[in-house]
Image (tube, rainbow, N blue to C red; front, side, top):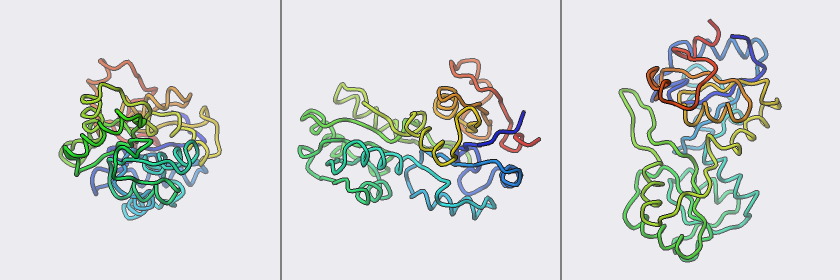
Length: 257
């Protein structure tokens, strides 16, 4: 594998699992940085602010600046700030996303009939009331968008349910498909990551553990792609997938081997 000018990394399942760094991840990042490569981290996980993920990487031996991390909460907030400034949102999501939205002038409403958008994200307090509120808001004309499409999130020892369950429930009761997803594999996320790197897509490689988000996004953007087998995807999944990466690696450590 040749070296690239820019490296776009997923986090969960790629550089760490829960609170454990993937073996060799810190050495890989240190080597790439020492060679002058640009690095950016893109995560669909909205449960903490991007600065918390930068702090976690640093704590795990991968020194990272806040501005090098973009997550789905930040991407969603920037998107709405740019395309619908001051809009009113009924939010299914947790406090970090709520904070991102309000900091960018987006109004959060409890009355679903006052909402112009229903924004759906990973919500570990998802309830019937929230589901019914989303139904009423969408029936009254609110647009239905989401931060990311992940079915599960990899953790040490397995997986936990992610936002696809909330999206699926709302699609089920409304009969409407989610209109827009701003996180991976969206080109909205790609453009934000390339802006941080200051590089064209063909000078970069996307490194992640998911075929349907990381690898799909990289290929559609014109980046090289490297799938790592330390997270969600298993080698046998490749034969069933319409998305095929350029490289399949046992772990991120193989980038420099």
